[in-house]
Image (cartoon, rainbow, N blue to C red):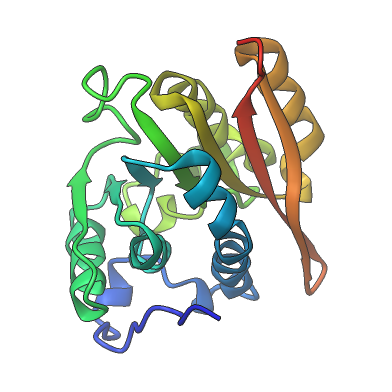
Length: 220
């Protein structure tokens, strides 16, 4: 089993500025679900994808970026500059060299990395909230507030993934039942010609969490 990244360098002051999943109900489970998925997918990623460029959108503490970096080496983005610094620090704490940039979703990467990223991971703001919370002045609140159906940020990310992902690349997205996973998969199929599957599922309390895996259709 691959080790979970060490986060003991983070303090309570860090978590005042960067989303701490453990502080919000059972949402800590989402990070572990993502790590378990990557561990299960490691052979597929290494042998089938053979990635050169990997990316996490919205890296937070840097736990997922660091875990992927332990396997492959990767980069990440975040709108919160403190989260960017925290991601780099988490990589350093675990002897993983990460590149991280502060940008709104992926605006700092396109068009330079158009169709160049081989693995994309995203644990997005997915919690169902009022629309206004998505644009809150509190950047910590924005890290989990997903707006109507928890889909407002997710729906912004999907077309960006289409622009970034390489021909043979793979995209992993964490969602909950309220985000309507089947509708997301159908949207990606119709609008961007992606095939999809649920590669991991977990019940955290009453919350159903899924990891969706997307690849371009073979004929695309």
